[in-house]
Length: 392
Image 1 (cartoon, rainbow, N blue to C red):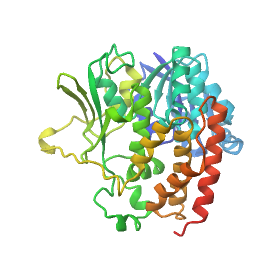
Image 2: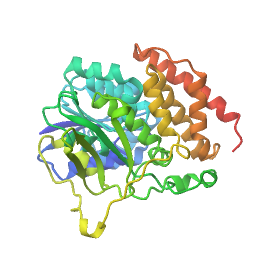
Image 3: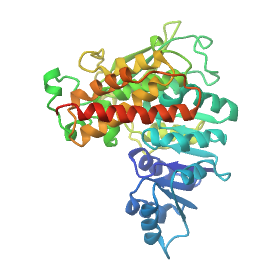
Image 4: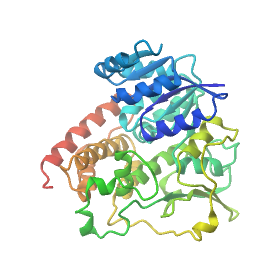
């Protein structure tokens, strides 16, 4: 029986996690659920799963949740960032699903790592922002870090189980990181200036939240995953090749020096990597339908276009620059995506804002989490100033 804290329970990853947990009451019990401000949705989850603790982002949301649960549920309701960290590091907990989107998820994810938990990492921004410090914390605490992004989980499954974060010792030549290409992979540069938030959030294969859907459409999601893969698998962008695979069936591949290429295939359903992380090294039913290769017929692959989708290049450059550059990249992207979703920025100008912010802020050594958070805030201010100067 694993005792779980689920960070980000009402998001798409959180709900998929709960669906897997619901199927295996003999294996998993929820200690804590957390959410941003969706008190009504959280109340339904608390009544069903009866966690000991529920954490909301602010006091107002917590007060509303408490009112909805009074007399029906004994769940303790807390609020704020400190409570998130307490839920992540609680001694009763052995497994933490880190599914809070963006930089907001880093403190609680780090708390879980420092407490030596099994951390199921669906929050790629934690590694993007603080890669070396984060991995050092994993090594120091003995935490068990399992990737949940479908691509990184696929790579994890294709690598030897004895892997000690050294691809050379495992005979790996390169990692083939797949990307769906998003909804606009065939759009011209001119057409990209006309797309709407609704179009960007309508991913052809995956059911995801709004922010990550936009990231997928710009290929920034793949850029962030490139950085995450470098830290998870102790490598660099030169040994990772991105393949646009519109069917989203091959989730990633590993090529070995003997010419073998191992691939992990499956339907585009996040319950597969979630179940893999929750039960690892066991395999459990995730509720995912069997893959029908006869119906698919064929797979297609394309090279990403760096001219129409420069975010992938920006991410690789930020990783190579090192220091706080990836944190600045991530912060600028979060601000730019939010502005696009609010219709105050053109879709095609998202990478423009990111590049201008990276140019404006001097990269410094990422020698502490305080430095990283300081650069994160500075980047958000600069990105907002750059957006104010743009014409939609």
